Length: 114
Length: 116
Image 1 (tube, chains in turn red, brown):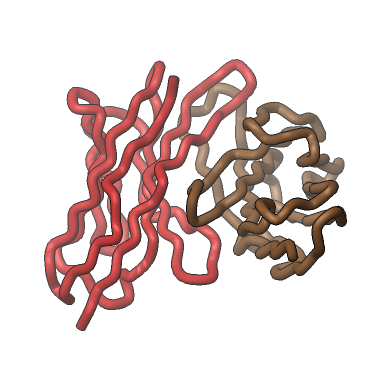
Image 2 (tube, each protein chain N blue to C red; image 1 turned 45 degrees about the vertical axis):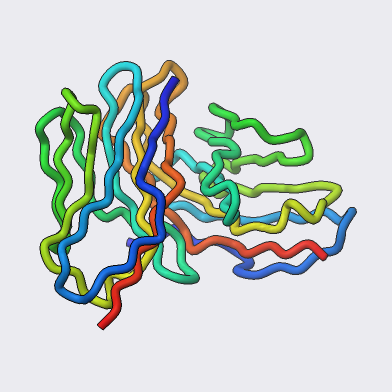
């Protein structure tokens, strides 16, 4: 079946540190991959996405590369800020006969301290 | 374009009651999905509606139901509320063309339901 596994949190980093949040997936067919971010008290916001192998999604200094050979989509940022403190969700969608089905990881909480 | 809106934002109910949550998708989006988010279980898929028909369903009991109207607005209903139904209920909309692997879901702010 389809599933997403992301690294357990919480993650605590100092401002300007390098961030990596690991995400691996299992999927049939050719999924699209996403990172969503959830700030306290809010819904999920799309952070970036990649729709095929070797694509790199990027936004607000965050990047993730769709690696088919390792079934991974790790999120990275070179220098985190306090405002990046949030919960990050990795997700995939696959084509099925009845449309698109989304699968989400359990979320990784990030806290950035000044 | 206006984003996904959900009403109400907060609800407090007691066990045994029923509740209806509402979601208005982004204009032009025909698919609406509902998720339950709890600290212990994360984000769990409830169901998806497309063109007024339930297209996909997660593993929730029949107390959880929904519908979609011709303008793509969707409602979710939970009957006979239990304490464990306390959660953030998120709605997401997408264009959801069949067979499109580039589809993206856009989320509303959620409805926080507390069952006492």
